[in-house]
Amino acid sequence: EDQVTQSPEALRLQEGESSSLNCSYTVSGLRGLFWYRQDPGKGPEFLFTLYSAGEEKEKERLKATLTKKESFLHITAPKPEDSATYLCAPLGDYKLSFGAGTTVTVRA
Amino acid sequence: SQTIHQWPATLVQPVGSPLSLECTVEGTSNPNLYWYRQAAGRGLQLLFYSVGIGQISSEVPQNLSASRPQDRQFILSSKKLLLSDSGFYLCAWKQSATNEKLFFGSGTQLSVL
Image: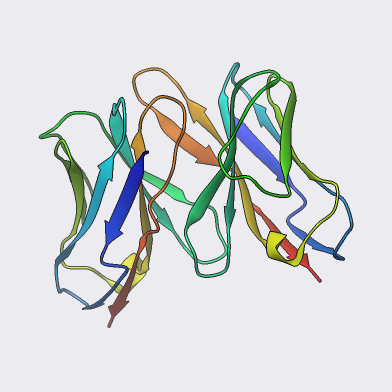
């Protein structure tokens, strides 16, 4: 059975304090992985699609990396506007199940 | 360009009443379609997905059903709502090809009272 685990569940950071979020998974027929950001009461917002082990993608203060069994989302020098829940979803065949998410709070 | 429409934005229904949430996609053909539910403070739970007209895969046994009567229309239904059906319902479609993305609708906040 496919499983997706995100850690930590919650992360409280001081503005400028860099950190990393983890997404680990066991998915049959893994083809890649999505990262999304979600603000309260809104639909998730696309961040990245990663396909190959070793692949990296960056957007502003966010960098996502991928290995065969896990992905990391690095937040460098975060700002309060980076506060959100970050979700990952491995790409298998057609089913798309998300992890429970990591809620990041950045204090000024 | 592609767009996804989901309505209504907010819905308050009594226990035991029926439900119909509709989602339509424009600007693409043969999309993969998804229904998710998010309980307050929780993650996204995959409910149903569809890879074509009339093809529905259910992920979680529950009080809900889904249908895809047309290529770009996805409907979530219930004959009798339960209190536990309350939550934020999101429809999404996935673009195929080399640069895949999952596009979400704006969501329906359902309160069952």
